Image (tube, rainbow, N blue to C red; front, side, top):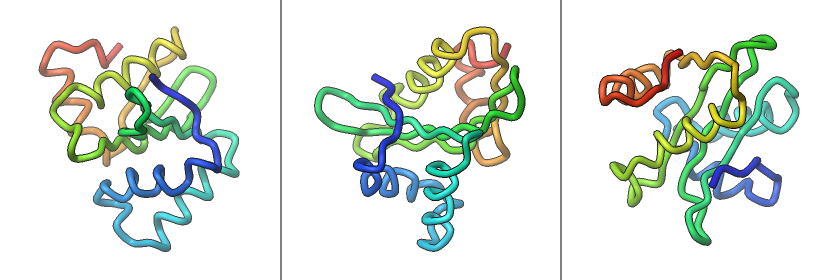
Length: 122
């Protein structure tokens, strides 16, 4: 289930985002978290499976019709189970009619999912 990020989830969200190659540096990761908390155009969502939070997906609203997927990360013990795909599909379901584009950091994942026949691209 996709849930919106809250400050009380900060440590788990930082842990998940730290798996992204661009977020290895602590200062950069802290800046990223601050941008999700303060910038109204950015939103961070977490994926809850049973009682555990196992994934994170962060987006930037480019304009009224376009959303860029900037971060997508899954706990390593839950990878290769379709969690990333489920997060993207749930996000698309919540934002019907909007176009989704990958960032340069999420492009490879989105392309991989599209090759597998998932409806990621409009």
